[in-house]
Length: 180
Image 1 (cartoon, rainbow, N blue to C red):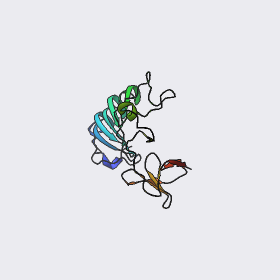
Image 2 (image 1 turned 45 degrees about the vertical axis):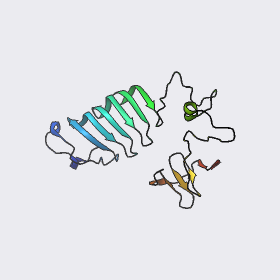
Image 3 (image 1 turned 90 degrees about the vertical axis):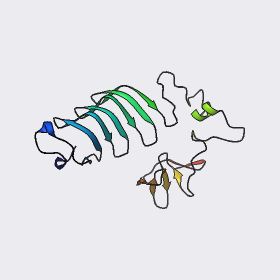
Image 4 (image 1 turned 180 degrees about the vertical axis):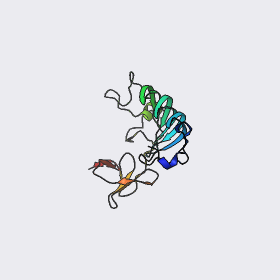
């Protein structure tokens, strides 16, 4: 929802967003309004830093548009009234998800995508994640999949060491072992 003071209070057909924040969602919208609704080519940024760039209609994703995720992955899709009609998910390493012929890390082939592309490591050198070399975990911290958990401060920081959240009871990885 757009703050009422962010809109010019003329005729709704002429409403324009004057400042960036959306009070209730914490999102940002950069684009046009038609009859007071988000419409046309636009950029919509969620509080999670996920960004949509594409077409909007009646306040919803509609037409061609792409969701860009903070981890570098993306979802290119055709949208209709906010719902996906057809889309393609591409991981940050370039691997595209294929719903019909998906053979990546399944029960028949447990290799990571980087191992498929570049081959297996020599005997005795394990690859524990798709990231090679693996991410360095700060001493005394755990890798929670979206950041590092410090049990002393009970804070999770993202991989750029920015505050992400206060900790709850999540499964995290510490070095080579798993902890609760």
